Length: 224
Image 1 (tube, rainbow, N blue to C red):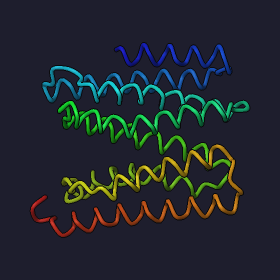
Image 2: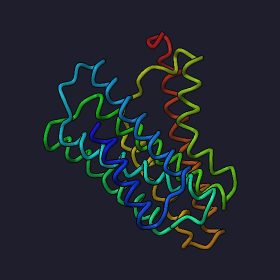
Image 3: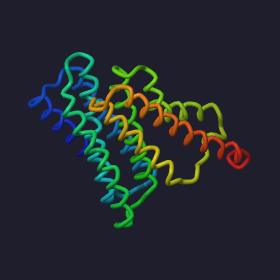
Image 4: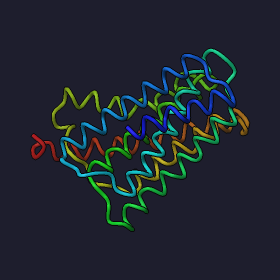
């Protein structure tokens, strides 16, 4: 509930400073409700007593991602404050590097926290890819939707539901997507170079997911 309240406060600040239309408000509030409901369900299912220090960092990042989503939705109806959107996204990316360190140093790592962190990352990449696709082409959406396509495919293919080993390279690839998309959103790099950077980021993402798929296929008997 605290996250939802903070989300609404941040949306109100955006509305008072840079302006926020109805679509942006609806997106931000809906995102806050869904996040709150998902966390409540996760806490109940895991019988988790409460948030640790790292989880609060992730929750803060989640509210910032909600603001990015609201501004992105609003950009379809009015001129978006690009500088504000990019600045919020950069802070969210910095916090992404921080919450893992906090979890390790405080010994507060948990399965729920790791899943929460992953979902916030995935949604930020999806929102940024939607924003960038308007200027760079619909193919950029492949970056943001790949993880969700993987999840949907796992509903039909049982062996894809198994856990995969954690790889540092996968974290590097995920971070690369966010950084490249932020640069693309900021529109400070010449278009040909930016297209090339986005293509490389997409190729890295395909390689990372392909490696996970290969591992799951090799261990499909265990997963079954």
